[in-house]
Image (cartoon, rainbow, N blue to C red; front, side, top):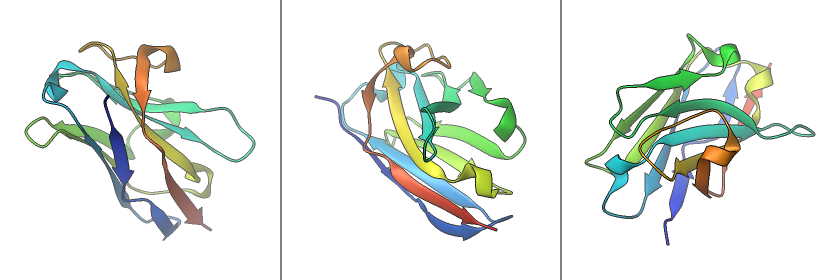
Length: 124
């Protein structure tokens, strides 16, 4: 059973930064695409960013382009989300997800393992 454990969430003022981490169990981490999604209060889960297993391809939702960066360290079985210039509308629970192949995508249906989430709150 694959386990994904997120960390790094918290409370930050608008304009600040946070770095989320997601540690995955298993020995073939580099074989799988990874992603971050988020769910704001009263809203559906939303795609944020994804990265191919090899790390050479990334996607971002338009609202975070230029502010967020997804990366991964396959030697540490960890994927990161560096979030800069945070806005109150970035407030949400952030979830890490693993795909069933090295590919990645923007749909929740691309992913079959999910973490429990970490809360990010941005105050104005």
